[in-house]
Image (cartoon, rainbow, N blue to C red):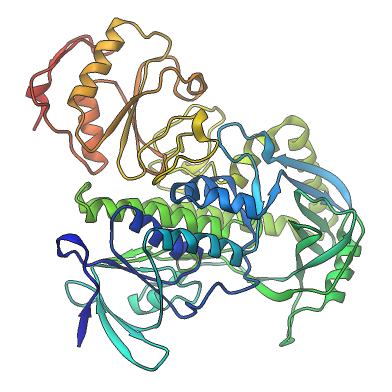
Length: 550
């Protein structure tokens, strides 16, 4: 018998999320916070898996986790990461100072075990009324109007569950991806890394992610705090059933680290196979993929879980908006276009970082080290490296290739870029008061006067505020001087998505904003009464708003 999922208000079927790792937890919590019923199923629902691999939460992820109230608990529970340091043959060749980021409440990363991250997000899930059910996906029928999932319980009982939408956040071996018939595509050779957590006694940097390169391979060191570290070493092969021993980590620490240390008894170790794979599509009808189910790549830069968190938030606000009637269903098509190219870019950059660390020829090593030293001295490493590591440079600009997504040489923003504005479902994020706050579920229209806040600007602002649709928040951000280098000196209307990315930059007049809203998946509604507005030199004329409404 097919059992519809428990229904929410109005008879809506909720979303079925498969996989309760960090990505599935964030997605489910986001949906619940926006009133969308969710059923979250995982085959290890008893609790977080101890000693899982992800260890660093970067600034952009903290900003997005702050939406559900999870950022500050993670900061309090983890160890602050102020910089990323690069060494070659035990000599310093460059650094990226995360503490110099100026457009975020979190100018640092957080090193924290994944099981602790999951526990924090589980707490937020429960606060929104969510729960995790134990079950294994054994089938998914997408031939009907709605997907029907077959779930096997621990006692052997099987359910046929119908949902409006199914999201696979169930890891690199995703059952959802398999049953949906979506291929994981990619090229390049796999690279093996031995990864272990444990104490290291010595003069280790307590607040830096350290990459150490040598002719025999690479070493990464991440500090958990209190003398505990994550060690990741490249190895040529590994055929043993057991995890790599302490002695192996000690050997490569002695060989590659600029600072001596004594590795203690490991809490956990494993072999990680760095691959380069992205799903052919991240959406097939009413089925979506997120996190490792959609993409896998090298551990270089600790970008995996962070990329999945961006998937979760990108999908959640769009899916919730469609379910709640805020947006047209077509907006869901942008999930794949947004995140697929972003994932491909992360695959490329992490693969490059991995290959650079494995150079063995003298001329390759000399070129890499010389380039990093020069970039460090000129400030280019900081200029481009900090946003790259923080994932602040992820953009949803219209693009046909990865080249189109590369950041420009200026700070001037374009449609698709991240804007330093922050949202929360409930209590505002701690430390975010220095920037405008936006609605976490709806589009926001931010009005920027530029150099002059004269009478014409006041009239333009009044007209836009009076005619804006009820589901769009309107704010004048002209008093925030930090936006001058980002938005320029002329008057501008900035349509911002709930995740803080720019949907459109346009003239601050109703016709242009109306077009931008329609293209973004919502619509511009008529005011209760005609409003007369006088606009700046760019438009040169007034408009009757009632005539513009459709």
